[in-house]
Image 1 (cartoon, rainbow, N blue to C red):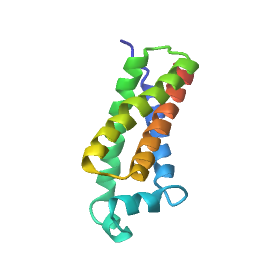
Image 2 (cartoon, helix red, strand yellow; image 1 turned 180 degrees about the vertical axis):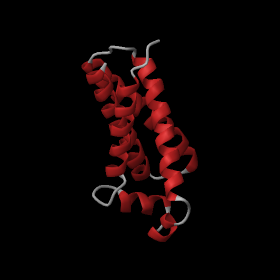
Image 3 (cartoon, rainbow, N blue to C red; image 1 turned 45 degrees about the horizontal axis):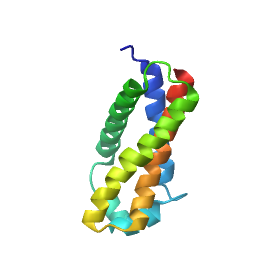
Image 4 (spheres, rainbow, N blue to C red; image 1 turned 60 degrees about the horizontal axis):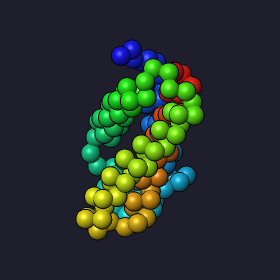
Amino acid sequence: MEINWLAVIVAAIASFLVGAVWYSPLLFAKAWQREIGITDTDLAKGNFGRILASAFVLTLLSTLVFHMFLGPSPGVQFAVGAGFAAGLFWVAFGKGVDYLFERRSLRHFLINGGHHTVAYTVMGLVLGLMG
């Protein structure tokens, strides 16, 4: 299969930026922190550069496989619909099963599941536009 590396990289960056905004103080940072029980001090611990780099590599790999799933020229409508479906029904609902057994809150599920639904929809949009 032919890989459109530029599309994969741009879609991964777009998806990563969704997460940056989603988990920022503009949207859900404080609610997410409350749900998982961590403070700003807790977040400051650890190697944030390594965390971001590792998260981007995982996002890039997810984007690559999603691109392979969509095919070389999926069309915008199909790619956006597939992105929404993958984000909601595969990623978010998969997390939802885990969260049920872990006794996590509905709010936590909605924050994280919403992020992946939007991120995969944006990923699909970019892959569809650049396909």
